[in-house]
Length: 224
Image (cartoon, rainbow, N blue to C red; front, side, top):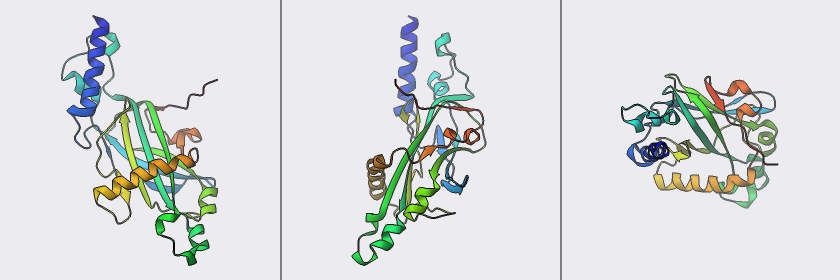
């Protein structure tokens, strides 16, 4: 019976995440545009502002109390919260090198992606930040910039327990606003960022202070 109760709770939680509360920004919200700043002489910091609004485990119980120890949770914390970001820069070095070839602007777009997952993170009223590190030498080599970087585009996703959350203002691509173009940009960024895997990194890998207060970020698990 205990196993059945736990299974029903997990199923209920999954339904709320994927169907019951699918409206935008219900559980979490992107609280502004990502900002790029110098973290050190070796790293740029790509910072994603966000706020947490509702705990899906609490919503799934619908006002009732957990019926077993296995179901118990602290409503002030959300477990297994993930931030994924895809970013795009324009390679200005190559653009200058091939300026006589009349190539389309998209020929010079380069994509990077990374994600941060928190074992747990405290819900707070204030804005929190997911921080990612981008190497200064890569930016200089490709002509993205030296002390200041401008994103050509980005796409952000949030997940709880592996389920994606509905978000507003999650994709930016220059002057383009129509949904079809934005979704196509995200699709291309997701596909092409794989060739640059390991360049954009979670900030806490090198600077533990970049992890939000009250959070426990996960580190990669390496198989022997």
